[in-house]
Image (cartoon, rainbow, N blue to C red):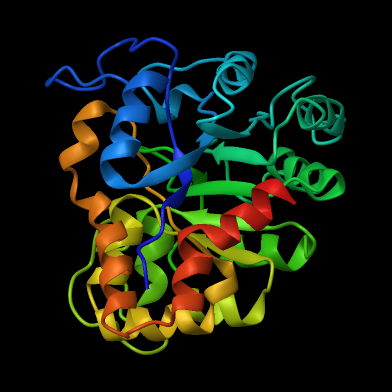
Length: 299
């Protein structure tokens, strides 16, 4: 069985490099740089996620700029727009469908990466979810805590995420981030749920429970968090991939050209080798590597 070209469910890019992201001078990858990286790691095309919140980046672009980047590079990108829950009138009854439908008509397949540092139950955040559900726009979320990081605010055990899944059953949520993936294990705690817990996955993981209970929850396997969740206990990962084969998406979370050496990119060979060694079926492999993404982004 041949190795497949991947569809990346999570990537960031800017038309120009912009402000350095760290002391090493890393900047966002331009589309041209990203194409070269994709050719090197075996990715056919990626989902460009719009970063519009300053708490999520040293540099941002507008949703309009992301739209322009998508339109100029349709051979490279699919596209998720982003709408801030404060947008319009900063109220819980703002008609956010007005913005969502505008971008949907221009090629946006969903919304994200949603990094707004508000609780899941903030009325403005719930208004965003309501309108995303109404417009048929899936949402990629980053979960965080209130201070010192970005992302939708939740607590250990992910009660905010569960309430959102329950209250908006027709809204597809793509879960992402350390605070999401650490819940794959039943022994996650206050000290490690914001990091990359190592070792065997303990039974009773909250994420597994939520996946079984809410069919509208899906998983973005990108970044160190997704790769760590799979690679820390391969035997568990193979069973997890088998059980949830229709709801998992390969991803990278590439931001900078230097990410070419980041361990998160080992997810692709992890999947390739799992297929070649018979740990997962070719059907499961194809769905996670590209089939699920194509169904989401091209249907």
